[in-house]
Image (cartoon, rainbow, N blue to C red; front, top):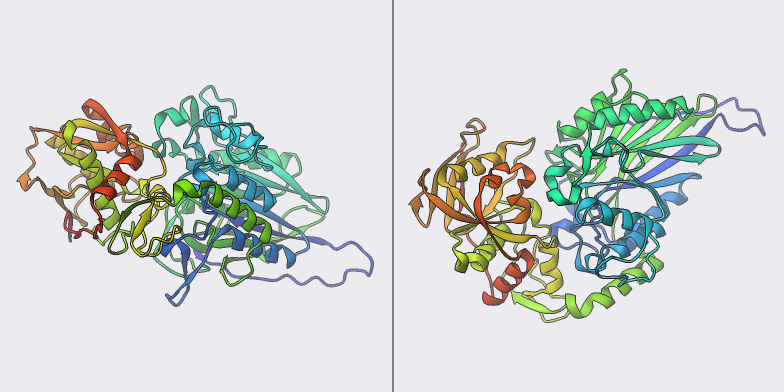
Length: 551
């Protein structure tokens, strides 16, 4: 990938009064909002600038203002979402099954969204309700009655039923000044590894490039030459500002290099990174590949020039950049009213104090991958299941969605108070803890699986479990010196291990947990976390001594 180069095409010689030879269209995208209606707190609400400094960013009302400003600068514009609009959301969206977030997206006049993995958190039937409307089958309509559904299509060209029938629309077409623009949506092929099996039962997720190529050909045959892809898959980065291209080549790069040259720009998501790159398509032509962080902190803007005769994008004239959603603009009043209403309705639950902390508990890990909040969550799950025989607990980093900030709570109790809403933001999935038996050899195999995928996924472990790993050792042989309660783990002995039901089903690629036996259910992870906070007032960040990294 290379850093995006902005080129402006100059039009000259157009007769006075004649229709312009081209149509200018601005695409405004965002990704991985996750129901963050309020400005996200801590590092989750910051954007890193090119000089390494940070600026506070995000919040639905500020996002709406920046979208309006971006629209005002162009005659024609479309707003697009690159997935994970909902799921893993803060309490003022999640307790209403994310209906306030969908209403917010309708206020933004979103034209299309691709499904992310979190759109499937509550299963396909709930996704269809989110799309089409109607009250929740168990909880009813708690925010608006009736709930009207999304005013935009959810796309998934590579999502089918097991018999091959499409489960979602593969594309939508928008017309600007009579020129059609095809919008293709694909989600990550390994989505089933990121949700519980029942959430995607009966569905299949195909290869992203094959789905893009198939849909691009279909659109091309229908005369739709200008094509945009929303792909809920992304690369990691090595830092850099919003418009830099310091990516570590990964799945998004692979898709961009191989997807049909009929596609003119690719918006990515899922990895919560910021980058603005140019990648050569299979025909050797450059095209923009972008991502806008997460939680509404960035808007990704791509200005396209479309030739009226060929109806195709003039690729060399594309201009693209990431715009920081700063909080120094007036919040959009209509959106702020929506957010305030959701917050007020949920306040009696969200503002209840459940514990106190002495300092920030961030979800970000130390260089070893161990995080203060991950330590606490694992300790909480062990405490909740120890009476049932659990010896250790392990949890996935991806299930910890927000850090705890040592600051005044919304209820005003003062510094260090943790509210139910803040705890919910940490553990929003409602996963059930499960205790299962693994041999020492199986436990080591599970720990080795932290490096078995395209990215490292560190498990967070309870205080009595320690291990060392070598970063340079080959995959499958990285972990050594595993101890429980100070004693070396015996490969042939049996150990009772607590995990959440997502991990127990092999989620995040940890298939070794599926070999566990004598599975016993425990409390919901959020309940375990809240109980632990209540039992440990003035909780301090634990020392990062459970996971040791060596060269």
